[in-house]
Image (cartoon, rainbow, N blue to C red):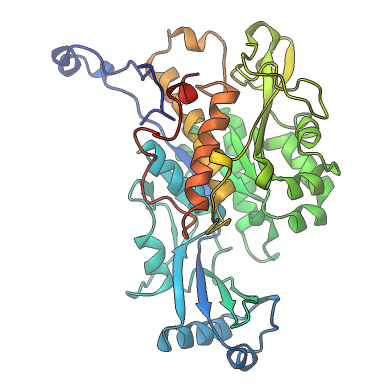
Amino acid sequence: MKFPGQRKHKHFFPVEARDPRLSELLPQNKPVSGHICGIDQVLVDIEAQVDDDFLARHGLSKGHSMLLPEDKAEALYRELLERALIVSEFAGGTIGNTLHNYSVLADDRSVLFGVMSENIRVGSSAYRYLCTTSSRVDLNYLQPVAGSIGQCITLISPDGERSFAINKGMMDHLAPAHLDQAQIQSASALVLTAYLMRCEEHEPMQQSALQAAEWARQAGVPVVLTMGTRFIVEDRKDWWQQFIRDHVTLVAMNEEEALALTGIADPLLACEQVLEWADMVLCTAGPAGLYLAGHVDDEHKRETSRPLLPGAIAEFNRYEYSRPMRKADCAAPRKIYTHISPYMGGPERIKNTNGAGDAALAALLHDLAANDYHRHNVPGSAKHRARHLTYSSLSQVSKYANRVSFEVLVQHSPRLSRGLPEREDSLEEAYWAR
C-alpha cells in the first residue's frame, strides 16, 4: 500500500520499520494487506471517425445515442475494424475505471465483479479490456459468458457531431452466485454505480448489486455509490434517496446528479442534504472544482488555518482539517465541508472529461483504504482513538482527489497509466503538508 498523496514530512505507515530479523521470527509483524471490491458493467469505450453514409447505412440517428441489437452492433464494429476507422479503444465502465486508478495509485489489490467473454480473440473488445486494466485489479472473479462485453461506440462525423451506438452485450448478466461473500465482507470498501440498477427485468445485475450491498452492510464495510447520470437519478429519485439511507456510506456525484437527487442547484447545499442520508459526499462541480462533505464528532473536530470561505453555508470550511467519521460513530455529530478549485487553475486544454470524477473517487478510496490498512496493522496508534473513515483530513483528501482528477483531464484515456509524480515541482512544499 503506497501512502495516499505527497507529504513534506515523513508520515508513512510505521508497520515495517522493525528489525528484519524479528519480522522473520514473528509472522504477526508482517503487514496485513487489504483490498477494495467493485461491481461493474464491463465495457470498452470506442471512438471512431466516420462519414454520414456510415451512420445512415447502420440506421443511426446523427447526434443521438442508440441502443443496438447485438447482431447490428457486431456488424458495425466489424466494419470499423476492417476500414481502420477506430481512433481509440479503452477499457471503460465507471467502476472499472475507479478500481484501475485505485490500484495504480495505491499499488494494491482491488477485486472486480462483472462478466467477461469466455472466448477471447486477439484484438477484440474483451482483449482490449484485459490489456488496459492494471495487473493489480483482480479479474479472477469475473463471470465467464457466451457473448460479448459491452461497447460504447462514439462515432464522430466530419462536422464534429458525435453519435453514440451502445452494445450492451452480456454486461448486465452478472449473477449473484458469482459474487464472493468473503471478498466483499473483508474489503475496505464496496463500490457500486447507479448504472447497475438500470438493467432489464430478466437480467440479474440489479439483484447482484443489492446482494453485495447487503453483505457489505452486515459486515460494516463502507458502501460507495457513484450516481451515473442525472437521467438515471431523475427516473427514480425517491427510490435512490431510500437506497442511500439504507445501504450507502459515501455518495459520489457531479453537480447535475446532485440537483437531480436533491432538487438543490447549489452543490454545497446539495451535499448538506445528502449528509442527511449518507455519511460522506464527494461532489465534482466542473470548472468550480470539487466539494467534500462528511461528519465528525464534536470532540474530534479540527479548525482550519486557511481563510474561511463564503457560500450558501457561511464559513463552511471551518472544520475542514477534521477527519470524517460515520454519523453513527459520533456522540455529537457535526457536518464538515471543504472545497478546492481546479488544480493549477485547470488544464490549458482538456483532452477528456470522461473519468475525471472516477479518478477523484479513486484518490478518496485510496485514503479510506489506507486508514483501514493502518488500523489493522497499528491498532494502538493515536490515529485510531476514534473510528474515522479516512486517514487524512477532509482538506487533504480534497487536494489528493483534485490532483488525480487533473491527471485524467490532460490525457485521452479515463485510466491512469502511472501514479502521481514523486515531487510536484509546480507546488510549494507545504501543499501536501497537512
